[in-house]
Length: 554
Image (cartoon, rainbow, N blue to C red):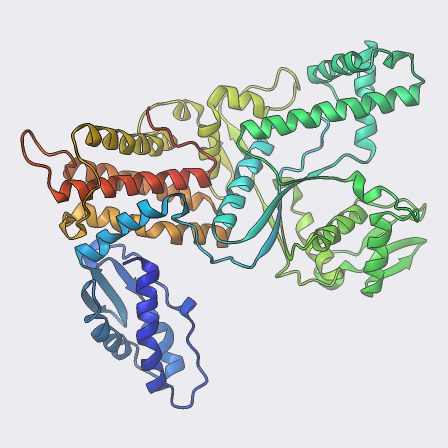
């Protein structure tokens, strides 16, 4: 019996009880209200529910009395061994071994689909993260946002949402011209121009540009800057994509800022259209020869200039056009994952949503990620003033980086210990979880060699206390995934996997799959192989949500 099965049983019991007690009340009960949780003390049972306390007031009932009525009916349900009422109205439920053990087969049969749920079904989400300038390599900050953003994407999709991950390419504006001049100067053998981009990577790009366009230095200055900029931009963006792909991050959409500035056949850009659309909403006004958006109506600390008096659009104009573009593409909910230095954007973006006619509390979400540091990490030899993603991958490996960055909340400042991440011991969380997966694979191989297969399944034989604990944790996985998606906190998956790995190791130490010596192979051994393989599947599924591999040997 899965938690979902038990929740439906509770809901079916509550309907008639509520009908008897409603007495004209308009209180309604939805299935989503019927939640279960794992008791902290395993002696209290497999599952607990506070539904009697939640419904007592709207139904005009005493919570403990209502809980007792629910418990009485639960006692007669197949698969439930016992039900107790505790405190003011907690309902503690213990499943019998057969009902609890049935989950092992359910998981193995479901395979990669186990853990997926429909808690966010119907939501269409645009998730933007990283969005680095294409003027240099990705650095340690981008590494954290990439790990978090991609894991958020994975748990959202696993919870039924239609989600597109998006990288906003900041390829318009002065920084691109500065980038082009820096590359051209390096190609000429000249010093970096004032305010330009330093670093050996610029020299590498210049050499690659000259190889692509040998006549670069013969062009007029403006043409040479343009050519250097465009070729170097293409090369640098390709490197960014390749770095992210090695980090197991692949974006669904690469959106160029230039698209917002490009005029259509009537000479109007997306930004021009965005200003008019905001004006139609009634939130645009003119003052001091400039065009403003009255964002203070939606909680911003000041109104924003969208076009200066000289006719030049501000960055806020591009933000507005980009936000509207996302809505035009069918995304009803937009999530932005921004760095720690972007706190000022939160109110601005929410105000922009309000000015566009959306609900700032419903249609847009801005997550701020805090800084990360790694003890002993060296500045990039190529870039000079940053710690590169490429260097971190070569030093620590993708799995260690992805897992370590994924196991902490986004709003938590983070310092990682590289010595720990390189250890092949249980002190290293990623090794601990991956080793548990590898052990499940080893157990399966050894069982096969010993003649133990899954031809029989007798869940009633799973009576050891470590089996109850392990099966209880396996039941939790879909709820953990749904909760991680709802809260945008994939670190909950990592912490769950560590707990699951510990329960598996304790079970392995106490419950034999391969009989001793010449003892016969019995159904309990075959059934435990189902439990082993179910654990393997859940660990693999969980690591997949974090973008981390599940090795079969270590």
